[in-house]
Image 1 (cartoon, rainbow, N blue to C red):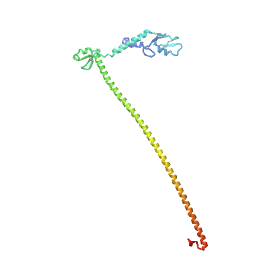
Image 2 (cartoon, helix red, strand yellow; image 1 turned 30 degrees about the vertical axis):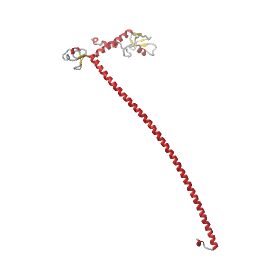
Image 3 (tube, rainbow, N blue to C red; image 1 turned 90 degrees about the vertical axis):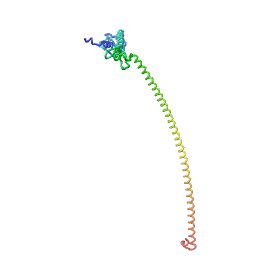
Image 4 (tube, rainbow, N blue to C red; image 1 turned 90 degrees about the horizontal axis):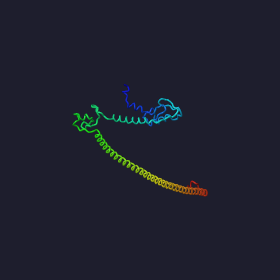
Length: 255
């Protein structure tokens, strides 16, 4: 009873599965104990071992690295893969919940998929019914047209985006050039102002030297005049004193 309930497809998949990589055999080989593995898996497992090669499944060891290609198992793996693909494809086919028949038709009035029995029923007999393949083709055509329109729109948007980026780059370059030009002009103005400042400062320094020299010359002249005048005063006072002595006149009487 237990065997009857088992899934033969799953059992077959288990039999063609490598115990090392847990995937379907690829280039299967048999070792001395009879167990099979992918060639790459067993070679990787035995890498670095010189003798007493253990079986990854039963742990039995052999003195020699015995690898024999298993063509029969390789064919079974191929058949198993094709069987699994067919089973999955059949499972993808939808069935009518009411009649358990494949949904091979599409009712355009009710907008639903129906089976061959539903097509002959009162509910759908007068409706426009098409094979699912044709509706799928129409759907693909509609999708392709929409994709074409969307791709065209995307291309237009990309073109506008590229133009915007190109314009932005040009503006950026123009701004950089303007900044360089402004910086150059202001540098020239700063140099001109520095030259003007230097020239005016030099003129003011010369004016200051001229004024100070004139001041010194004037002071010297005034000192000379003062000295000459003071000398004349002294000489006059000296002569007046001598005159008073000769005339026997008081000094205060003269001045």
